[in-house]
Length: 631
Image (cartoon, rainbow, N blue to C red):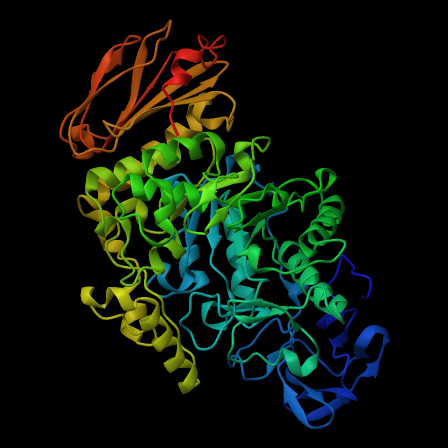
């Protein structure tokens, strides 16, 4: 592998001092050249070590369109293309990313423990479906109270409708969204508004259409198999070039686009038995970049392995990722809220597992999983709450339903408020999915715009097969239909109507409480206590800070339940009540209560009480209350 320069991208076409530098990795090619359009001309590259081909020239300018010619026979887009203005089969565009004038010099990344994440899909977040239109909604997101937006993948995909996980050029920013310049402008605007930006990236596979990577070199290996076919080659012959390709991609997002955090999709599907795992090597280079720029960058992952090795530091034998999505919290919460326990939900018994996730993050940390038919997971007892991201819905959990139903279409208005509270009072990083804050009713469906007819039909049949057992509930929406995409767009007009406006104000209040109350803001997993009454379907979450205690009383049943408040030397003062008529609820709980005072919780409701500041510094979980906690 060539030496990675943290200060500048090497792969593809870059510009410096009026000259263009071209670097292509094609270890099995006999010759490599750049074919330029307007005017048409061909510039040969010279072979270098380790399968690289290079050229320095003044004949390529920013904005030029080009392809890479292999063996004087076939030409393809550049694997490290930064722009694909004519889709995945068309020519690449030479782009000078450093021409952009940044105005975020005073920006400091939000500390990870203060991330309140809002996940969104650029194409469906606004009617226009562009970065520019998203920029126009930043004031709204600030008003809501989130501190970071997470953008679903923007790597160039076929056509203009896709979730982004079929992207096939990891360096190229989707042209229909606004391309690389549009993304740079958006990030700059976010920083001026005080919002961090998380970008979802896919390093476990590449999409099928426009995937010419194997023509250049062994980007894939049959040594490992994934749900998408042969794995990306991180540990087989010629893997050094593939590793450099993705390391440089990570550095590009941080350095040239000022992205604050990356969310790495499905890292459990990254296969690597190298002495240094690719994720650990990425961490090493990001650490170097942090030192050089003085800016912190966060690496977040999606993993379903319940293995803290991914989020442990390298000094403890880990890969150094800083946080991970916790699907098990979601699954336990959904079953507690009434989701039928089948499929991967079959491993979850509801409220007992929700209580365990509040304390341990992972529900399965060594127990036998009936769904997997094996013992599963390890304890994450030494990992702080800031390393876990929880949610009541996200793009996967909504969009991978046959009809893409959001929570608003599956549970009552009252249960929606309770589920939102269950996430936002947790000792973890909360994530919201776009529109949930106003109870959006449109679905979020799976959609594509591939141009190859056989591939479109294969996707259609795959979706039908996946949901074969559900066809009695309707037809699987056609993922290729424009209507499927349009139906998935947010209805912004709902924000100004009730009950949607009420739900938005409720989310605002919950988020503000999390920021303002010390016991909720501090992500300590040691200073909490969970008490469950399974017969009542009630859960009491008690959290402590040296200055305060907060108790969150939750009733997941459809009947009123009497729940005692925990013992406290100071009176409990009510902070929020989801059943208050203010939130269109059936009736409010008392404004204050003393220790061991029984509160009648309305069905499907949440009540939050707190002590006055400065009176809780001696509280510790006691044995009698812990004995009530059952898993």
